[in-house]
Image 1 (cartoon, rainbow, N blue to C red):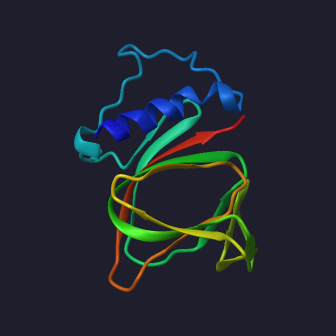
Image 2: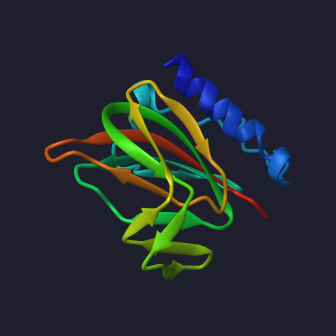
Length: 147
């Protein structure tokens, strides 16, 4: 779990790099612990001033995502997928404020991601998880919003 701690430190340390400060204070110092990468019962997402932490579990290929103002910091906990990034979004649709979805990516870069991999997807970069039939992937995901 050292990698998990490292990615969280990187995510929160990057606030300044994307125009944020870590100036908010909570009575316990703002510490949130998910033992062994599992959120406490009843908590699927932890929201902070300009960040959120959640677990993403996929059992099939999903839709393309583009977050215009959010960086994704990811720690793959289990499973394997092909992560496709960059390129052009096929059949783009607006799915929410500053969010675009699509059916595929044309001309992107593909790489295999598996348990233990840690990576960051910058704001504005199309990304898509492609799973083999019967495959799965579970990731700790920290979303940091650029303001």
